[in-house]
Amino acid sequence: MSDRRTALIAGLLYLLTFAASIPALPLLAPLTSDPAAFMAGTGSATSVLTGGLLDLINAAACIGTALVVYPVLRRTAPVGALGFVLSRTVEAAIIAVGVLAVAAVVTARGQLSAEVAEGLVALRNATFLMGPGLMPVANALFFGTALLRARLVPRVIPILGLVGAPMLLASGLATYFGVISQVSVWAGVAVIPIFLWELFVGLWMTFRGFREPVTAPVLD
Image (tube, rainbow, N blue to C red; front, side, top):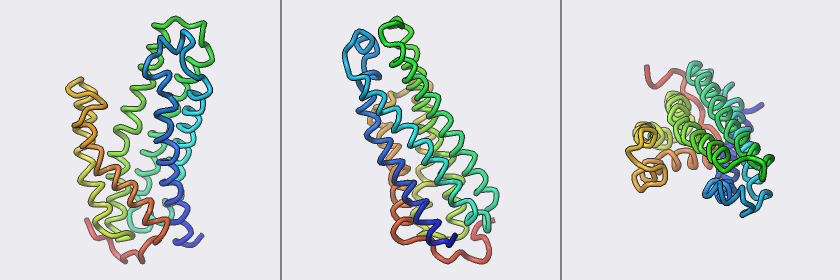
């Protein structure tokens, strides 16, 4: 497969992660915003199941982005290429655990107690923090560094991811330890660079493809 075709497929998969993950949040809201009310019959089960399906599509696209670009990245950054595959796989697995928790609540709706439902929703929320919330840090470090070494895309794109990675890590850890809320202003600001990095790299690969790689790594 040509590098142009590889970049196109990887870019479309990156954009698919946006198309699947963003609408999943409001679709899951009938359950995640008030588990007790959902168990009492408020909210659409179809909406929640659709949100879970979109999360699974997101998980599959996550793995796909790394597998597709692996043959290109390993030429100049074999460690980064493999690390990106592993980090994306871990992210997808964490997302899948959250989907299973959601599916369990919907399947047993009317049979589980509100407390059990809230516990499963808490598990789903934890997977959202540890998966889409923190794994993009590792993704940016592996993929961003590999792209920077080979100069496959404009330098500003991976640099944006490498700058955003520590910001997102700090925000994620602060959320994990209860210092800030996952929906706080600080958390929102911290995610902007990573959001833009993933959007821009997806758009660039889709519409422009990879540049001719350098013959030697840019960074030691």
